[in-house]
Length: 252
Image (tube, rainbow, N blue to C red; front, side, top):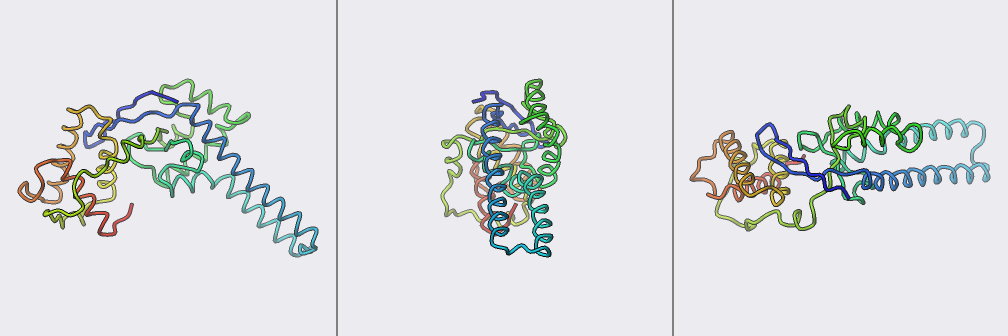
């Protein structure tokens, strides 16, 4: 497993630390994803054999089935990775199993555009066989990026450990503070706060304190939240406001 540490300074001057995913973990993820794709192709093959043997596919229906097969194969080839990474915030089934995730090189979660862009180049990375070009490219750069990552501006990192991800909220669910202004928080700001909170245990204590202060100052100033209306502890404030934001039904 890779132990390379990467510190990203966000546009808000917040320091986020990640562990880069190496070739081994990315190969494990790709291997499982390819097996899933093969299984899907095999199911289509069995369906075709069954319907041909049963006579369901006469000449007219056979043309429709071929057209449907072409569409499904296209979606598997080009849509499997992009769709999963868009909906699962940078993960496919293989990546989830391997404990890795795709993020932007700014530290933020990827969107559909980055997911599509990095996977359109996958056909080049795959050449000549099973990610030959992608493997060479990853070996030649310190951040283990394949060509698709360069095009989309993405990185692949390890998930937080169970201990890191489990310790998220230190504040009680019920509190005397009511932050109505949380409704005006943007999804991007919520993502920044949550990324910081999930990664804070891996950040050096002084850098963590400064980062929490900067995010708090930025959010409080934009939402016009005076100091007397929020907890004195910056991390508690961030926990409370993102919890209030999520409880109001906001989505990413």
